[in-house]
Image 1 (cartoon, helix red, strand yellow):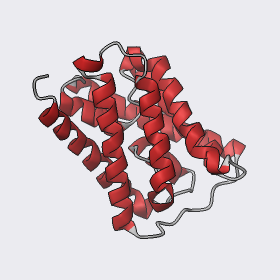
Image 2 (image 1 turned 30 degrees about the horizontal axis):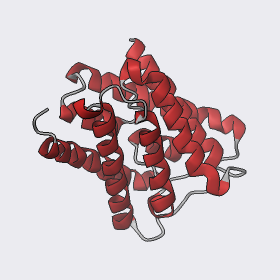
Image 3 (image 1 turned 120 degrees about the vertical axis):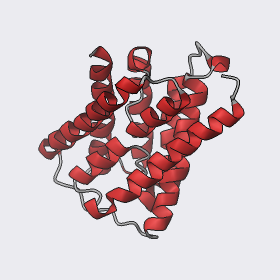
Length: 207
């Protein structure tokens, strides 16, 4: 049970930070830095207990890699999505609902953006937090948080820069994204996470 609570807390603060920094008056161009930093500190706080996923796509990748017990996958997802919903509800007390961000280039570009940077995120998680070659390192939280920051700066205007089905759920409930675009996040993010797990096995097959 403690693993699921840790996943709830970490995901909650990640999604809450997204809402607080993205919805006006927000942090403007500094929002990706704040979001990446929130993920970093939560990974450091809870990584030793739950693995610090805070993201259903990361849980999927870690499960495919063989480092997450099958019986934990659904409870992790439920905890992460419940945390996103709770954070979105709390945002309604802090902010006026955000204006919907359109997919300015279109859904195909948004799917590609979410795929690529969810791949990058899962790839960094697998290599920095689950690989024998980096076992016991002290940089994994920073690496994971900064990957999200980089992705948000790089493709945030194209897709919203979620790279996380829980964040996608949160921003949709907050009114930042449309429900009609929710499939974009699921397809891109789960596809990117799955591809990262396959790439990891090809490169680190001995593990």
